[in-house]
Image (cartoon, rainbow over all chains, first blue to last red; front, top):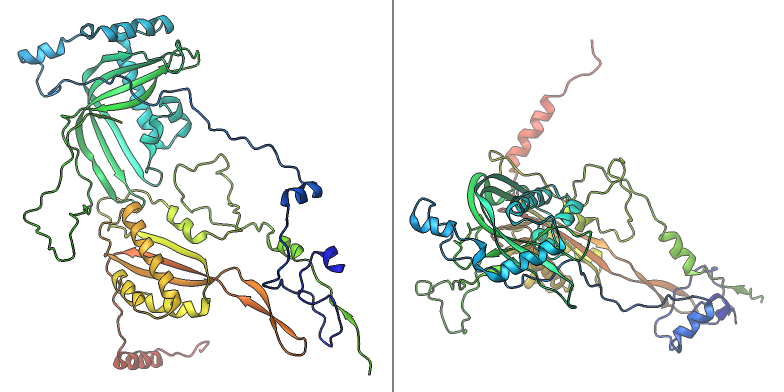
Length: 294
Length: 218
C-alpha cells in the first residue's frame, strides 16, 4: 500500500523486521516482473498531461525554384578568341535577338517588373554577385539570404562553416552581358519566376583556409581570369521579390580547376585476394565533360 | 528479546534527480573562438553561460577556428578530438589501456589494441578509427598515418544502481559501471621520448646541491 503511494519498487515489503541501519535509498531491483503500464496514454491523460496536436507538415519554399529551367548552353571557346580577330567580333556581336524564347521571356518579365532593362541589368547582376561573395567571406547570414536564393545558399555555404574564406574581386575584363532569359511558371499558370543568365569575365582572387589557418586552396596573390555564367532569379508575382543569385552554369569545355594543396587518396580498382595491383598500367579514370550547373 | 521495528523510509529518486539536473552556470573564458558563423547579438557579455548537463566539452574543441596563418609561421598541426560515451566497462580498467596508447603513433596504437585481450580495447579501436576518418574527411589532414595520440583519457559515465543481496537480510548497493573514453589526435610524427641517463640525474643532483645559498643572511 505504501509502495503505491510512494511509487517505489522494492523487492521486499517495506515494513521489514530487520536489525539493520535505516536505509534512505533503495535502488530499483532488476528483473521485477511487474506488468508494464498497459495504457500509457490513459495514464498520462488521467494524470492531467495534455499533448498538443501533432502536425505532420513538411515546409515547402515557394520563394525560389528548385533548379535552372532550359539552361543556357554556352558556345564552345567563348572566351578563347580575342576581340580583335574576325571570329571574335562575330561572337561579340551576337545579340540575344537570336533566341526568340529569350525575347519572349524578357517581354514577360518587363510586363511584371517595369524597371527591368536588359542593358542595365547585367551591371546590377554583377553587383549582386560581388556583394553576395563579400557577405560570404564576412559570414553575414542575413545579407546573404537577401542576395542569394534558398536553392543557392547551401551550395555556397556547405562545408565552409569552420573555414576562413578570403575572396576579392579585382576587375571586370569585359562588360557583363545578358545572354539568356526564361520565364517558367511553377505549379499553377501565372506563378511566374524570371531566370536571367548573365555572362561575365573577370579577375578574382580566392584563398580558403581550413580550421587551423592553413591554406587549402588558391592563394591571396594569385589573380585568376574567370568566365562565369550566373543565373539570377526573381519571383515576379511577388511584389516584395528581388533579383537574387540562383546558380551558376559550368560549361562542359571549362578548363579544370586548380587542385587542392593536399594529396587525396583515390580508391583503386577492386582486386581479388590473389591479384596484385599494377601501378604502371593503371590510369586514373577521368569524369566525362558534361555541362552542369551549380 | 525485543526486536525493534524499523520502517525503511525511502527518498523519492525524483527529488535527487532534480537536484542533480539543476542548471549550473559555468564561466568559460570569452576567448574561446568558435566558428565565425555563430555570432549572436549578446557577444559583448564577458561570461558565457553553458548548459553543462551533457558535459560535451571535449567534442566542442573540434569547433574551434583559428585565424589564417601568415606564410612565414610554422605550420600549425591539426588537432582532432573524439570521444566514445557511456559504454559498459570500468573506468579504472580502461585507464590501463588508455595509458598504453598515450604517445604512440596511430598505426602502433591500433596494432596494440587489436591484439589486446581486454574488452575495452575493441571500443577504443573503434574510437581511434572513427577519429582517423574524421581527421581525413573534415579536418584537412593529408595522410591518415601521420597522426599520433597526444591525449587519451578515461572518464566515469552515469552508473546504474542495483541491489546486491547479502546474508541475513542485509543488502548493498551495487553499481553497474559505465565509462567514457576521450582521445586527441595530433598531426605529425609522435614526439620522441628522451631517456634520462643515470649520469644526467647525478649531474642534476650535484648542481642542485651547488646552487644552495643562505637566505636572509648579512
